[in-house]
Length: 349
Image (cartoon, rainbow, N blue to C red; front, side):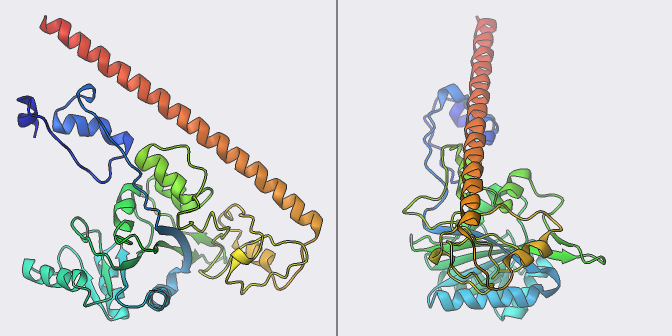
């Protein structure tokens, strides 16, 4: 491509995922200076996908995955399909056996066998597939309703691509990350993040602000988002759900005189106020705070609303600061590129 572009041929480059932080590397790879390229961007994050992170017990992984997959198969009748992404081949093989469905990975077989597996996926003859990131480019199946990641992906760009396999027909779909909990000998509980997980991926999983806002900021350089919008499938952060220990436990602040129980399944029925994620090692206290049925006083609700208002203001200030920093960096990078180009032209003269 460098050779063709160097001859003055007009080129059109199309890519589904190119974070602003990688644009300079892209320009270098194709041999076209930024000043000679017109860039048109649209939002990468799909409005019909609801993003969520759920906790599970590492030692009960097989059963937890099986239950979640069965739940999604019931929720999305045929021809709805589910992809379960795994970080390792052995994990993908094991879960395929547990679920009783096909597995796809780099060494699953020769090209003939791989094509056969993909035909079952694209032909909608099989409803569930476990896979590694080898199941990637070229997968365009309209009936995939849920993409589940068992374990946290290393990179947010990778996650954006893989979660985008869901909802290609623009129908409501889900992208779920299963985050493992482990317990040490002292009984202290911790959530696994991964030593090689990039910081922005950790931010996405932490759920301290809207998950779409994190995706938009990193993938598209859009820092003006405050939360999921009205026409979008809301992430669980914007719905007021906070992961504590397991998939079905939520933290809510209800209206005065409302009963709140541990088996709440429809938090939208209450005046939900999202609370910050519980730090590592505080899960027991968080579960105790949910407790059995209790009543909230007017004073408690007012304090919670004030706390939530302060948190939203802090988040807005942080987003605005990040946007200004990004703009300054972009201006400096462009000024530097122009200066280098001018210097090169003077040398050639």
